[in-house]
Amino acid sequence: MTTTGPKTVLIVDDEDLFLRTVADGFAPHANRVNVLTAPNGKLATEILGRCSVDLVVTDLKMPEVDGFELIAFMSRRCPSIPVVVMTAFGTPEVETRVTSQGAIQYLDKPLDFPALARTVFDALDASASGHLEGITLPTLLQMIGADRKTCTVRVRSGPDEGLLFFSRGDLVDAELGTLNGESATLALVRWEQPAIEILGGHVQRPRRIERSLPVLLLEALRLKDEEVEVEVEEGRTSESAGGASGARAIAPGTEPRDVNDESKQMEGDVMSATEKLKELAALEGFAGVAVYTPTGESLAVLAGDGQHLKEVGVLANNVLLNAQKASVEMGTGRGQQVHVEAEKAHIFARCLNEGSDPLKSLPGKAHIHLVLVLKSDSAIGLAKMRMANTIEKLAEDFRM
Image (tube, rainbow, N blue to C red; front, side, top):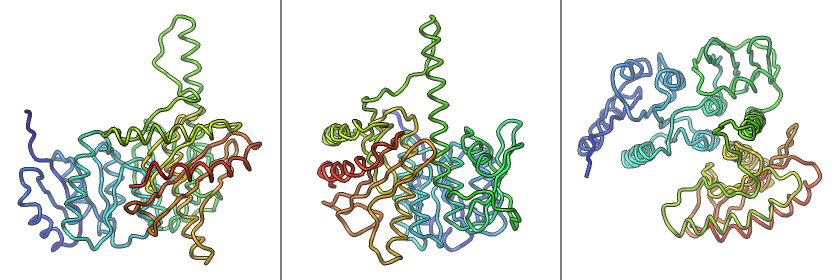
């Protein structure tokens, strides 16, 4: 059997006592983890420049170079290294936005060492199996929004450069060449693996962006879908003419699976759920439907002509959770469903929660989100009724 050496984890926090406690706590696990520490993001970047690191655990609020700037540096220099975020300024909104993207995990401070150790070992295992990857621009932008940060985000891809302007967490403007506002934002967030830089200071910009960041990210994914569809269609044309193309469309009615099928029981649940989702596939304008956990982990997917259904579901989860939080604060109870009407699609997200925790699933209780995408106005009323019926049927498949 092949053995591997310990993984290197970099812990970044400005509290010296916390760093010493963490180093002492991991000492008995030296065969599994080699711990490096840094008191701020500046020293962390130096360590990343000279050492091979498998995982970074960082606080957000730090002097000199904060956690946001550190993550932005990693996006440029080491984008494949996964990140765990620690913050004492956490809210359910921050936690949901951070964890739902998958690239980042979240820990609320103050935390005990066993909780940190579990998260570190789980993150290392997930990274080794390919289930955890580095930071993405949409993830970082949502973190900035959730943390109410004021800054300018510089984004580079080759010779091209754009700017995104945040004021107290609100995206107020963007620039890319002759584009500005929402059009510039939609172009920038579709860039693949751009270099990111966080610029501090007060933002003096006129507001050119009215739609919320999650809605804009959903729109950007829709545009990506259309771009992929064009590439696929061009590939089919080349193949019919005798050319070779590696592109392959996800045809309506197929059953791609984004769930971890490690057990036969889970595989059976996914198959059962997918059969139930087919009831929604008959709706006019059907573009895709999926079942998610509250934090955005996909459980079952039935794709139509959308190539980024998983990402759409993650973002729709954020919109739903924010709406639920607002409805509770208004004293009207926890909201069950949201409907986002975009230019060329309707996105519905519905919650079924048999437990009491708004973010977690309790033993024996189903807690799932059902996300449906339609590209037609004619079936909106029917879609809402069928979603309510379908999500009740799905509950039996996902009671923990």
